[in-house]
Length: 342
Ligand code: NAD
Ligand code: ZN
Ligand code: ZN
Image (tube, rainbow, N blue to C red):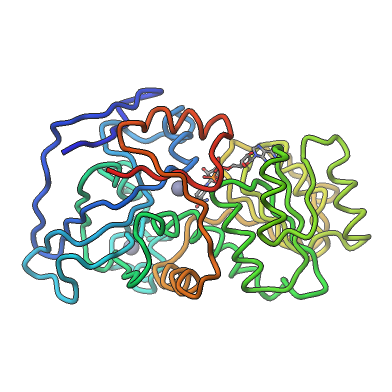
């Protein structure tokens, strides 16, 4: 079968003769419908997230059950499913609570398919356990794949701030790409706070307006923080979701978050923040560094999508174009999320 492999720094290659795996025990073989192209892959490819090479990329996967191991129950050939991405040990307390994204053994295991072991940018994916599958019923798996990360990650981050996201408050979303376009729609569905969107692309900002942002600010503007505070007034934003995470965006986030607010840095853009007890962020601010979401939350994301509340903007490409698609993503040329279709 075909597969897109990370072979070392700045080295992504397409292989045509990779062996199709056979599931045993609780394993499941999935016929891939689509694999999302996440910006985290760019951090892996450029070496800023160190992962030993030699595996198939693709950690946002959806498809149809092709074959199940002999102890799998509850799934049959042809069922459309999402693959929950952070593969934990399955046994520790966080895993039992479905938060495999915070598995006790994370430091000693590969993070999941496409993140150190073979992922879904291939014709087939071997999923190590049927517990990692979430049925999607009538959703189209070729469009739904990004729900597993582009939607789940901001969903989980937003959920932990939900108490603060009341109708009289402001929430700032920085970075309206794959995660950001989902974050805007999730916020619009689960809370009534006023949404302020920031990006460096006017095209992405125009798009943000169609997806729930009441205000848009180009963060290339030197006075972006002042523009935001002009909207929020003295209390500033109760929640800031930084979906870029570089030094400039973290600085912006710190200057617009209000007292007792949440500053949630999801992006892995290599930010540096100098800490001082006073003057960096206001008193009471929670600085959060969330990773992905839980299996149960992925079910809730599927629920939102099935209610028609999440419209994934998906650009489809064949597997063979993986390298070109990574290049487009790096240069901000993807609107919403790109997926690779085998
Ligand atoms: P993306 O490339 O689809 O979108 C990034 C967006 O940010 C683009 O619209 C781009 O124009 C915008 N942007 C770039 N620089 C900016 C700046 N200075 N100010 C404002 N906007 C700016 O990326 P994505 O796939 O949505 O991923 C976003 C980030 O989140 C990446 O760093 C990725 O690694 C990270 N991520 C983290 C987790 C987690 O669990 N913590 C999960 C998935 C992705
Ligand atoms: Zn990702
Ligand atoms: Zn575990």
